[in-house]
Length: 264
Length: 274
Image (cartoon, rainbow over all chains, first blue to last red; front, side):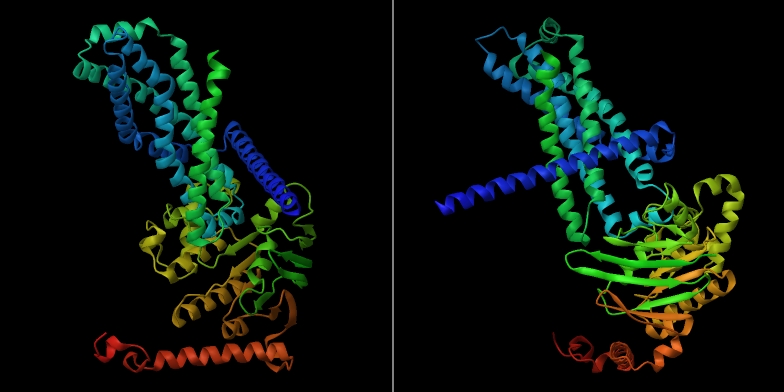
């Protein structure tokens, strides 16, 4: 009996600690986002830093995002074709591929690529700056790391992500159309007919809205985790791993919240 | 110029690091803080401009509290101070010009204009015995350890601070470069009459350039006095620390004088197979 009580108490305590930790992180990140917004509105963010970050996040991520989008479109098309052949009119595949890519695969796969390529880099970069006292140096020079480091990255993420998702949607849909033709022999006209049949313009807006939210979440978490880094090279590695885990969870949770909030 | 007062500064991480340090550094003085590793020297230095917040106690600079002052006071205090970090803490993606010019406050840089900022950066680099023409476009990764330290020093002095804080300014440098940096610190203090605090392990260098020296041990200030008083002191802690440092220095020098082939374990240089 005593051991059960002990285990229960331990469980409650662990749950409490985890809850407190999540609340603290959330509070810190909200403060970071708020300060970044303030710096942006006051025009204190260096345009040069913003352009450098936007180029690095957007242009340099483009090849990987497009490869991922192409493969997502191809795989969706092939699997849909395999399931529908002989049961459902094949032109429905056009709708399945386009809506699948635009509503889900485009934003989520791009976000996963963004986490790996951009989020991890930001945490490692800022973490290294933290452990090598460069963040302290920024404070000592009377500057604000939020203005210098956080705000340009958050703004660039919010600009780059929708642009990448827009391109990923287009490339994924076209790749799906080509794959449908080559694997199940669905003609372009039939594919486009099916795609138009269930298409709503709102779907594209929904997709870009997701992209905007992911483009905000990823840099905020990665900057926050980078600035929290302690303990040398090992600490940078730990912070980067934790940051990637948090970003993936946050993106998937946000993704799961989108349909009940915006599709019904 | 500036007066710095530490008032019962206490800071604990897992264990207490600073256990109530009180100290006044008068205007224009050069104070060296020495002590064994892990006794809170760097922590004390960082509390001076609010980079670390003490659990209790306060630091007061020219009558203005660092931690309990009016809004904006901390920013003003930081603008008065130059901080030389242990590993220089230069920004990797910025070249030397960009790194040093960051030491001039934003609003002042706007007021001065680009030409004057460039002139000040140039002079700051000359003051630390670097050739501006050669180093200005370089990235920190392209500089030697000694040059990086000097660039860090140039960044600290370019804004013409009233306070200079040095965290282990000669650690990791060879004796020639260490002596050169010590000389620079002395020259800057003489030329600008800034209030300086130097945290260091280099006791000989510290004794040669400071007005007073303090020994921090176990989170407490165990000794404070002039270099002459330090040398004469028969406080057991002071003697033990000074003797340990002297022994370490002697061992290091004899190690340097010994040819590599005589050093124990240096099998490769003796020609024996590994």
